Image 1 (cartoon, rainbow, N blue to C red):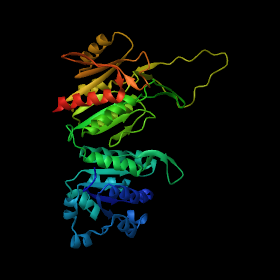
Image 2: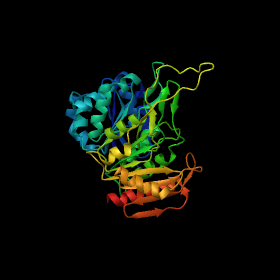
Image 3: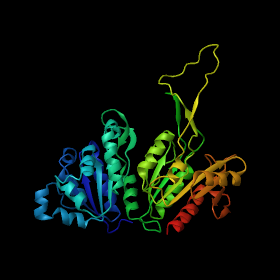
Length: 393
């Protein structure tokens, strides 16, 4: 899929910069031409000579030399895609501010090609409000992201901040060029359960595996859509070429969904907990000998489907899911009316659906009810993605 593609790779300052060499090897093996731009920070971790050897191209690291030999405008116009990997906290900040103080900044401002950023930094830096604001702004401007991942870090710490692996970045780069009826469309998908904490070690959850939502995200991406997947805690792997935002609670999920807007469609597949504990304790609740079980006071969680259906930036198509154990059609029709969405995909979860490989669903719309036969969740996803493409055509 990358044969003949021209990719500018911007390597910024992170200890994970060594993975840039692995990424280049992967891209070139698929027939892509890669030209590297090495920032001053990136040069602290990987050499110009190693990048030149692996790309087979001259490496640019100086704005003024590049102006004389190549020029940032020509380099920006040459690219079919610009990939920033690793993208440090500093580079993301410069991108958000539109700074053009070095060659990388000038290329990013001048390019008309899609831009993919792969963040890599200390978990505290990634979680900082400034970084998150910069990322949100860049997403609004159309920059796509992959990662960061949760894992071990260079400072003997662990958390979200680890650079995605080259294979996953390759998938994300291929997705930039995906063709299909949903090319140019942005679809938001929610998946998995939410975990609502009771205390630092206990939480309220459900049996959702996230498999159906992840399959839907993959099917939409296969049709060319830019997909943002907001997922609760799951063990299923992230789909190729999909931007994943991982959350824990229903409130986290709503915030991530609103941050992902605008979107052409929203598919709310997640099994969101309806309630949370009103007063989470910051210490573990201890069982006292002879004492009764504690009473938990519950509070309603936000209604994500209804919120998106009535949002000022409402997607053109909003699809909800109804997991029921009885009166499937009646409950689905009632949910369609109450939530204000366009479609409801209803399924009976009284059997082995949650965590299972197959699903049997009904598609409920204002026009009626469609019964779909029992099939693998991946086939349910493909059929739903095709219907979304028809609706957005």
